[in-house]
Amino acid sequence: MPRLIFQRPARRSGLLR
Image (cartoon, rainbow, N blue to C red):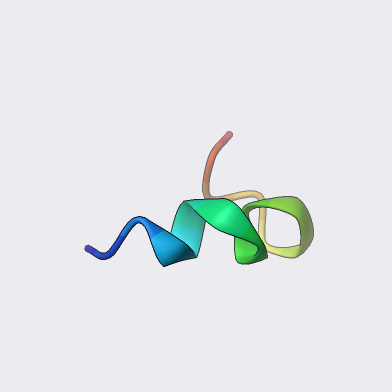
């Protein structure tokens, strides 16, 4: 899992949550 997924998509997808 690349950290890019937590950089921008984290806001739209909420993966960071």
